[in-house]
Length: 126
Image: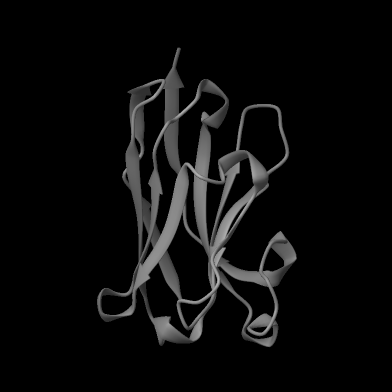
């Protein structure tokens, strides 16, 4: 699976961005998908995940109520709608496709993912 993330940019606090992650190579609909982010000087952290069957999205507490993960299997794309952005959301955002052996689990750990996109920069100014 090859993943291409896009949609990042510079936005003021309170603004919105929509990240997209286009997948190619294998059957996208089989994979649980996730978004992670990494801020300068910090560890990569889990942001959101959605299962292969578009069920049960899950978020890190810091983005609940502001971010929404969704997928369009017909277009082989997963999205991250980010509203109410805060300066602490500034990071490089990565999309990832999960290892099929974890399809019945909640995919919140980096080791559960096999494929990663290149990252897209999100910068939120105060």
